Length: 175
Image (tube, rainbow, N blue to C red):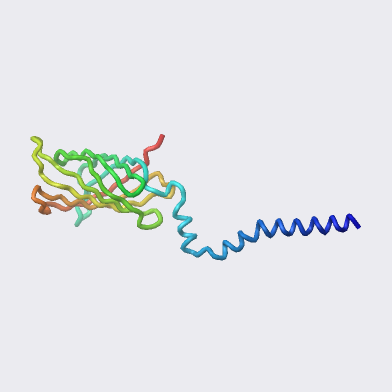
């Protein structure tokens, strides 16, 4: 008689344990929408621009797509919360400040960033403002990206003086 009660008790306890462990998993899965699954996939660790990036930027003609005969390097830091800073040495351009701007995710591994910097003549006189906007796409491993950008150059009075385009390749700076 005791062995029958012990077996019944064991089966009941086992059934309760299984229902306590599996039940909530089944119920919570019922209420998760497809948009929530997308959000989980999007939040894969590393799927962010946050961090420091080493870029090679090639200016190009917006109308023909022809690349300029030179490229230049840039360092960009994307900070948590959507702000950024960059520094580049464009051999074709005037003296300039570092750039400051904003960034955001637009979809899965795609981002957009915009920043501006000021330009100066060799003697230090202010010559204008440059606004850069770039759409960036992270690679599947989140350690490199490509970008397609536009540049608007404004003179010291705020008048649009030039518009250009650029292509970018970048790698994440790591230890």
